View 1: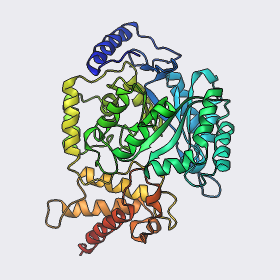
View 2: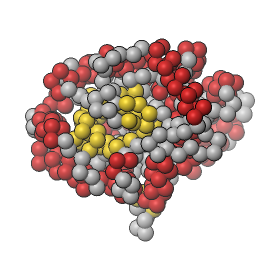
View 3: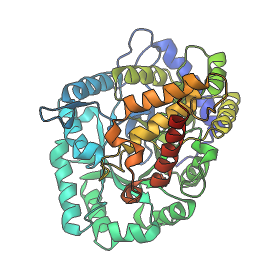
View 4: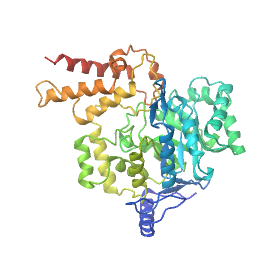
Length: 448
């Protein structure tokens, strides 16, 4: 297998982009919309020749509505429309799990995809046996995914969220119960075309998992990668993405990227950071810059984006149609921005919802999302006597009460810690909730 450096990749892909723009065509059914040039960017999987769209669909954030009983359910009509538009534009990789959206994602995704020819898309799902890891329950989960997704094979199948707990946790979930041997046989039989794992954890945990490559021959690995985590992951609970990338690249293992926008945080930047991008290209969204960063590395097979709304999908289609890898100057600019973002006291929450439901009804992802939004716009950290303090204080408290119902706010956290067992980012969730609550109570006390 021929190895290619990022510099050579930039030369080759740049020439290809110019040619595609001149031709004005798209491949594998990708439809070019008005204002778009070139074709959807694809990467070839060297392991089996799959032609995979660089823009992949992460199915963890489908739009939700309320049913007659007031319960949150997936808006199937909206999902169908999003999938139709994605496939029309050439997107062909759809990633889900039995546990996403409280067990609803696989079925909704399967319904939407099954309305299209099976050779138009690749299905990626996971063995998410976090609770009952017995062989009976794990095999039942595996077989149920076929039913939910209405398929006879999985193109990409993952051992879900490997890393936390180290090798011992992997051994209990997949080796002791015989599941990894079972899945290897399923790969041999063709019901799994590519077998890999998604990773959340520290460097020693990653090293232990990648050492198993000689034994299990991982076909691909899914990692968290974005321009912030490239060099600014905390180094304790998460690994810098440049290390993950280099270790996978030297073994020539294709990479699937999750969290390219860091749970949306890189789509809404502080003014001091976003102004750098506006000066460079006033028409490009912050999200498009984040995607271009990740896609500039040649070992990347596809980049997952959880596109909840049509406007998100359209913006991403625009980015990946006639895709332009970054040059060295742009990569240096992104590192400068990452260093600036690192100075903001954000909670490292990606909104995955693995911590939910909270037994006390607390909206953990919602509280963290609101807090991070307030940090970004400058409302957090306002002090009495500061210019515009009253306005910032009022905005913080008003938007908090509007975004998070009173019964679901941070002051209801008793510190039971149940949420922490499921957090792939290893956030000290009760500690962060208590810190945010203290800040809110302090602001309330300043009201005369």
